[in-house]
Image (cartoon, rainbow, N blue to C red; front, side):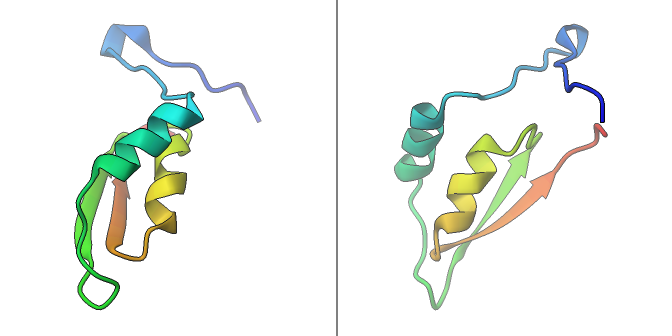
Length: 68
């Protein structure tokens, strides 16, 4: 498998700081486990933020990534 690199010409930047990802996820208001809110993460990259979103039972997380 090849190394993943951000395409700067497309303005790509990968979130790598787990503390920042945790804070972003914590700042989201959600629903309840019975009626979760939908979240769409556009450009999931390496999945650093996705990891924390998926841990929350009050969110239903969808991801959209067009890069291989």
